Image 1 (cartoon, helix red, strand yellow):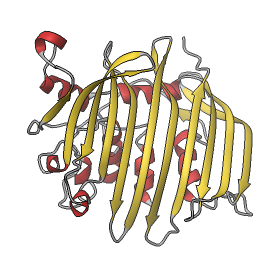
Image 2 (cartoon, one colour):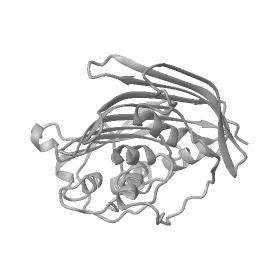
Image 3 (cartoon, helix red, strand yellow):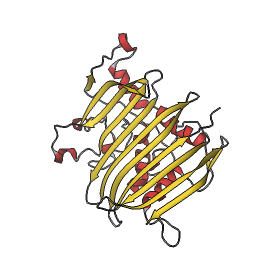
Image 4 (cartoon, one colour):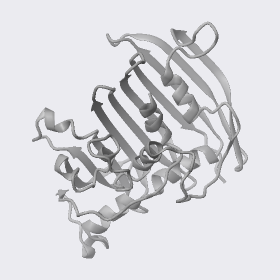
Length: 305
């Protein structure tokens, strides 16, 4: 159960805690990266990836600036049939110190709520906590390296991997989930290919950086990699992350999960903001009923000075 909270919670708070590791083997896909051609080396590029804060800042903008939202959550049974739908439309308000939401429309069909008005499932509750807080929340554009002492190491690790994908700052316990988040760690490099290429996204020239599990691995060997794939598009003009996708797969006696997350970014008056977020996943935690869900969130009409 907690792991789902970790994976969702990283969208809004994190810490940067990167350390040096052995440089992985980087594959260049029809692209030349050099000091002469680009102003930086391949090693510099990987350093930018590991230290990036633009993705995190984009999500701080999401809470900092007023905007409208339109979301749809679908819950499925084990046959893939929709058994519940929850639609929310409204406005996220912000005075640049505090933020709050007002739902203009809430439509639910099927098995979403219990008779007492509480959710039947944990997934919508988790997304409410992340994207639709019930209470007024503090907002800021400051990025701090300070640790939240109330967070467990697990929570800090998940927040870290969400916004600083190459960090070694995760707690290293042998064979545990936390170690598997450090995708640049020397012991984890055996599972991955690291690829730099060119792409066009929303008409913008971008560098694409992909970390994915090696296709040559046996299925049993792939079980050592919780993160199966991360793709990031970096805007060549400013190195902002303007697209990212994640693929998580993990299975043991306690936890079974398969999650995909896609985040699309854009600019409003030169402010870097998330426009579309998509999640589809399955998780099964011991002592809880498994849940299969799909979540779509579109953010529009940002009020940016």
